[in-house]
Image (cartoon, rainbow, N blue to C red; front, side):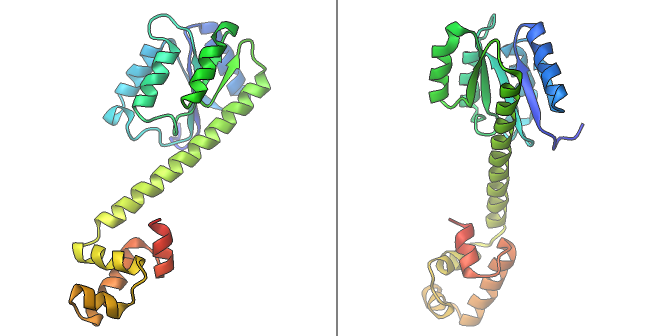
Length: 210
């Protein structure tokens, strides 16, 4: 099973609901994994490297029942917030009518959506697909940010100094004067900065570091 394929996690204590959601997702060719409790999903997260700090690496979302024995869906939601996972792991709550106020409050705290039981099959899957798309965008942004940080870390202290002055719009002569080095040395550092940051111009560098 490819790690790059979207994944839907179903967290619901009712096996019949997990089976029904699984069948629905399978009919739309969506991969899924079911968990019978919030505790089981937490065990899954805790078994990941760094407790899931760098997870997920593929578009993912959670279909989460509000009311479950033991740890409730709302309590699990709070733990996902604490772990900083919501942007990459959108949560769609599955609610009974009496749970709607709690679900609305969860929306204000970052939940992606809530769906009342019984739900419209097509409408639910449409929301799942939208949540997966949002997750994919968030993961792509995080990947780009990590790659940018790695590039910056590869720069020497002097190259960082030159880069900062390039971004400020200073020409080589003024950079040389400010750092008390030769223009030729600035040119060498500038070329190395462009190479390591994978850009071809000062404008491109400035846009990258915004």
